[in-house]
Image 1 (cartoon, one colour):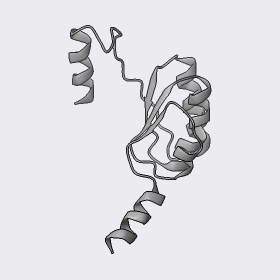
Image 2 (cartoon, rainbow, N blue to C red):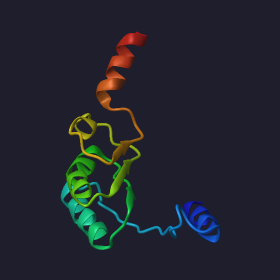
Image 3 (cartoon, rainbow, N blue to C red):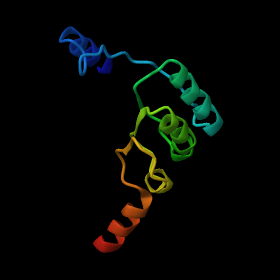
Length: 108
């Protein structure tokens, strides 16, 4: 699905005038491997990363993406340290656990 979306964007001139390419990486839920993947992406000069799936991996890789000015989007990481550390550009799709706990208290 995502690859077909990239092909559609590329047929229309890309995203913001640049061709979009999927560059896979698997951190195997290992924070050390996440840093290795981050370095791989930095050397490949990627513009954005969608991943890592767990907080420890996202936290470890985020400083590398920040230093390289790579946009980082985490679809599932929820540790509040990710947003509280103030690293930019970083976007979290899932609410930090601290917000979920407050919401749960308010709904009880």
